Image 1 (tube, rainbow, N blue to C red):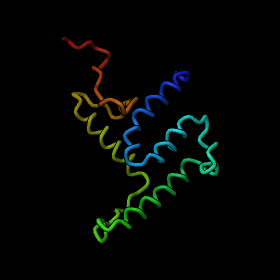
Image 2 (image 1 turned 90 degrees about the horizontal axis):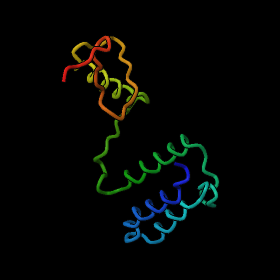
Image 3 (image 1 turned 135 degrees about the vertical axis):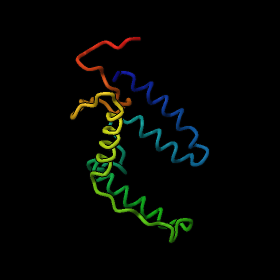
Image 4 (image 1 turned 180 degrees about the vertical axis):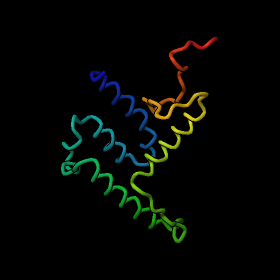
Length: 129
């Protein structure tokens, strides 16, 4: 429900409280951002672009941080992945789950990734308990 925003913010603020012990200022900034209708109201985030480009920038910055960490020095070999790798893995997983069916169909209609795929009995037949 969209009207439960205040309740959601309250829950998140409590869940994020653990971070206040590490960095009180960061905790205050994070919780302040949660209260904004649009986080772009924050001066530092006002120039935030679209999600895709922001994620790309974040990935580059994270990679720099990881590479700069002395614990990881000369231990990192980043794999080269095709952009469609995740989709391929999901499809392989779904195909494998469908192969476990007694009568797998050539093109199963899988509607969700939130639950494991199960097969419905052929021709709408009822299964015996």
